[in-house]
Length: 392
Image 1 (cartoon, rainbow, N blue to C red):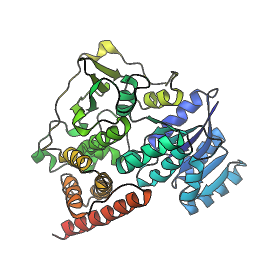
Image 2 (image 1 turned 90 degrees about the vertical axis):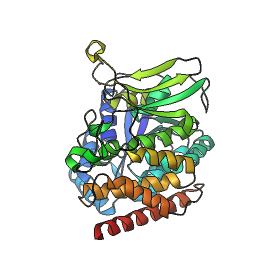
Image 3 (image 1 turned 45 degrees about the vertical axis):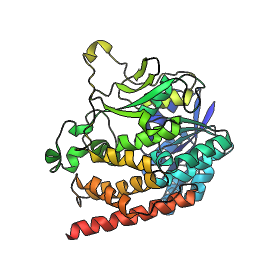
């Protein structure tokens, strides 16, 4: 029986993980649940799974949760704040940490889990994008296992030889597939009038608004290229992006002998999560079986970097190194939030990120403090650029 700490329990990754825990009660138990302020969701999880500990980032939410659990006569302990979240991720009684907190808030607990030697199921992009070298050193120092549960990186992991090392043996290139989002094939002129509802209407995956917009701009794929660099130890020139609208081939590994290995599956996040939870075993994920006869065709195309410049900005940030990926990520979060709030046009997201990269002084990313400082500076600069844009 493996005990699980679920960081980011109220999001889509959290919900998929809970479904798998419920499907396999003989293998997994929920020990700790962590969320920001969604009291209703956490209270329901506590009633359903009876975890020992619940941690809320927001103190007011924690107090409300205590009151609700007391009324329901549930004995789950409740703690609050960032320090409690970090401590929860490093508990001695935890075997697996699912790192699904969105944004920079997920950095510190993921590092704590790594130093404590946990098996980490990584969904938090920022941990690798902003602090990739730092996290990989923590994984090595703590003897942790880092298993990606993004569908693309998990697909690559499945296609690599066992104990392949970093970089993996015999690999020529990694190919990250991208659906292209709702605007695949659109020109910049067509993209100028994109609405929030259109940007959030992903054709294949059910996701939150922020990641849906990132998929629409292709920034999500750019962030995944940075993640792949740190996860697998390959340089940028050996990590490719290819559009694949069916979202059936989740990524590919190209070997030096000319072989391509691909992982195929339904567009269901329970597949990569189940793989990482049980690895090296395999368990039923509950996902629908892929109907090969119904596929009919698999299409691939090169991304349009002129229409979708966020992908090129991510390539450039990885090449620049240091704090550049952290600046890219933070500025993008601010710009996407402004777009979702109706303050920016779709095409202005890339413009804001580009200007933040130009204005921010880059530094090393050798400590959590320097990463968080770069993150804070980028957010302030991006917001200033947005304010300037709105005044003009």
